[in-house]
Image: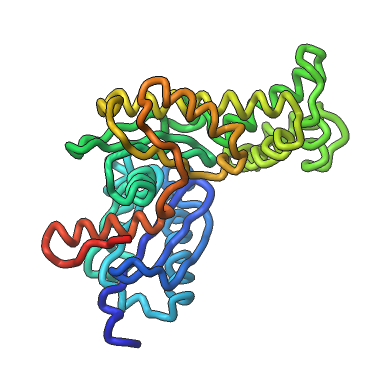
Length: 321
């Protein structure tokens, strides 16, 4: 171990599908990374959440070649922690599990914003298994749109895209909707011969939100190959995400300002077919907004979050680019 390991910070980004942890120095250099399973307390429970976090943190420390005892602070951005009861439970579990001098907890959307804009005012739109828009203005006010889960929200998410695709496949089978390459692609992916065989799979006990959301990659592939139905689904998702961003912009009164709108999550692998509707929707209300990828990934945003908290009490330098 070296003497400068006392400045090491762990940042953890935990979501419905995966958990990512990084070990970084206070100057911003990432020296280790780990990846693990989901860590959304509200979906998988506390034991499974903590198991994913522990394994991911261990991987990051191994990758960095350091022991956990050398970590000065940790920032955790976890999906589901916006719920007050969940926040208290996960906070207590983190403090019991990790012997780290300073532990800070917030939401995955918050750390994504910090990483995406380097702590500056702006908005982040996240679309993975679920979706949420989250932003902050120059007065430090925060606002969100979405993030309410697959039943009450998550418009434009991988789950939403997959649900629309499945409905399109069955609509084509019924003759109510146009034919689509999604039929063959989804059936082939699930090793079935006809759309009617989807019913026991989709409604089976072993199929949850994450399993359905994973079909989103197939929709993206079909859209890239020119399938019109898939393209319409992805484009519609883009407009939904754009509306979420606009809702946040309006709540924070950002319309006349110049700021970054960063996009984060696997759905944006679709490229311009989903990004352009967001750009168009946002430009109509905030013409000076700039749509772009994040400056830093969310896990680094978690490091920045922890360092910011330490700086508030005079214990750490800021993390600059």
